[in-house]
Amino acid sequence: MIKIAVVDDHDLIRHGLEHLLHSTGEFEVVLSGRDLGVLDGRTDLDVLILDLYLGVDEPCLTAIAELSPLYNVLVMSASAKPDDLVHAIRAGARGYVTKSDPAELMTTALRTVAARGFYLSAGLADILHAQLAAPAPDPEPAVRLAPREEETLAYIAQGFTYDQIARRMGIKKSTVDTHIERIRRKLQVDNKAQLIAAALRRIERGR
Image 1 (cartoon, rainbow, N blue to C red):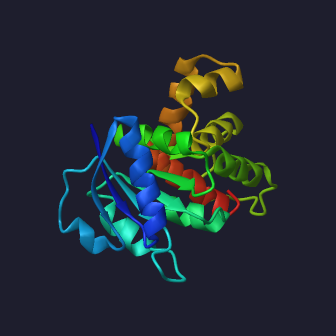
Image 2: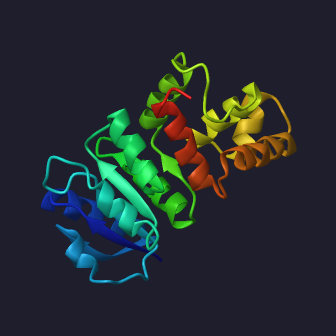
């Protein structure tokens, strides 16, 4: 069973999510509450589902940054604003889904994040794709990547697997691996989550 904690200040959202996950027989909601106090230092969790706006007008980015070393954080929010997505991922979230996403996407996201992967809902991937395709206002990026490396990084930011990237780019997976290794060296990142965060930072400053 995948152990889940749900933190959301809306009772109906929490209870509905608990019912959904229980019905699958695959997930166990072991903690559920309106605020982060429900965690009480417990760390034997596979995923922490965290509402981005916990009863306040500002996203809980500081909490994500503090919790991400301890938990696989999956952000759940009514907001699909690009800024919220970018900042949440930069803070350390391993995934982001909106409350308007279909229920089956939540279970897919939980499986992915529990396995320490990265997940974006399709709608948010489309938003990122549009931003990545926009003209870059800064012609002199701090770190310059080759065009195929930029393309690879864009697909990484959208949540594609290396096999999917290879098919979309019409190249071998081993070539994708080579691109990724070069990107990691240039951007000085160690894993996929850091790669995604680096890609989103490049979006913010227009590459």
